[in-house]
Amino acid sequence: MALSTDKAVNPVNLYGGTKLVSDKLFTAANAYSGSKGTRFAVVRYGNVAGSRGSVIPFFENIIKNGGIELPITDYRMTRFWISLEQGVQLVIKALEEARGGETFISKIPSFKITDLAQAMLPGCTTTEVGIREGEKLHEVMVTKEDAPHTCEYEKHYIIYLHYNWWGDRDRIPGGKLVEPGFEYSSGSNTMWLDVEAIRQLLKTDIDRHA
Image (tube, rainbow, N blue to C red; front, side):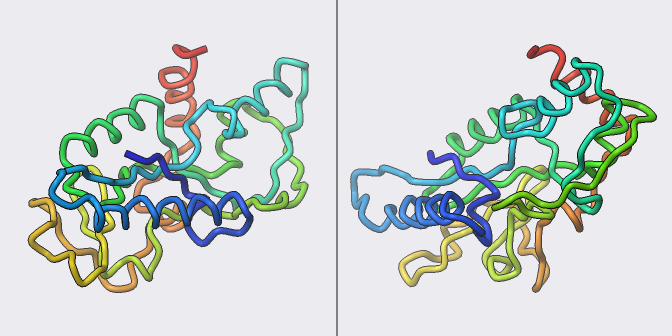
């Protein structure tokens, strides 16, 4: 099982490009596993809430040092929220169900970075400082180009392979093909966290791991 990232989707830097290549090589490896039964699949999610790649520790450091203003790279910026437990659960599900070649993606809520700032420091002022090199405005997990090969399940999506040797019979039961042109983006998600919901998740998903 390979761990992917939203950076592999429409990559804008070398890191994202290498992650995309990794995803493609890993899933394509199923063509060479033969009769040995080895299965290769991918799990994709963004930065885990509170991890080093998340903005949360950055904001926390400013607040701990008495800061009353938080820098926002772009006021339009959104992200997906996934906890460590949710990430682990997705990996376990993929290990149990994968038949080979799938990319598993959790159905999780989005939030605005401006709302995160208010949840962490109520009433704070913010300054827009500009998007950093290699940073994206929104996280994208499924592109419109992948939509024809993507199925929606109760709690996740799966992108399936598109090769001549791979057929519909290999799909995991219970899924439904997404609509043409579908894109799973933090900016157009159907599930959103408001300031109070973020504040509660900061207590349950972050504080207990501090």
